[in-house]
Length: 243
Ligand SMILES: NC(=O)c1ccc[n+]([C@@H]2O[C@H](COP(=O)([O-])OP(=O)(O)OC[C@H]3O[C@@H](n4cnc5c(N)ncnc54)[C@H](O)[C@@H]3O)[C@@H](O)[C@H]2O)c1
Image (cartoon, rainbow, N blue to C red; front, top):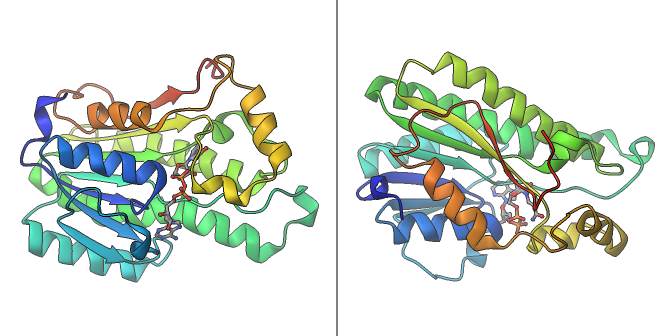
């Protein structure tokens, strides 16, 4: 267990369920005060006691800025931001994707990350300490057929994180990503059985990612101990990733 989370303050977006919930619970268990930001906070199962639960859409810059201001007012400071909220969108050939669907998948998965970083980075930079973790996907590295908007958004998250990690490199603030392969979460409800089977078949270990595996890695990345890695995309792919 990383030592550096005791007394730290954290925001995890999309933490009412799935991967975000697993990460938030792990950070809380390691001594951090954790806020859940989610557009469906009523689905949170109460497995741990968050510092606050805020209902918002991460693609809305004004809502994200207002929530961050409230978090700073209530917590005193924000040490950790995990941009995890995401949607898959429909599994469709690119030419059947409606422009509004493209915009909403990019809006949540990519602009949502920008919205969080743009308010957190100046605050963390001014304090000389911060950990930003953005949840990308193997789809952003490989490009997965029939989820082109999702693949584009996640590739964007990786490129954006590399860029801003350099802007913040001398400030004590690190920015990293995790690129998971498939885990069994509510996200699968947006996928077809064929797509899920194809994604599992890509994983050399022959199984899905387990939530404690991503919670453990995330807890390390946002700890004080992870101090000399920034702009990096950590792999959680059961051997699928080769670069
Ligand atoms: N499950 C997988 O196989 C997998 C693989 C790679 C990457 N990821 C990424 O991990 C992250 C979490 O996915 P998950 O599998 O836990 O999904 P999930 O659907 O189980 O949980 C997502 C959570 O985010 C919330 N959310 C969605 N859109 C939001 C918005 N606009 N504003 C605020 N909250 C919002 C949902 O209410 C939900 O609580 C996503 O970024 C996803 O792309 C998931």
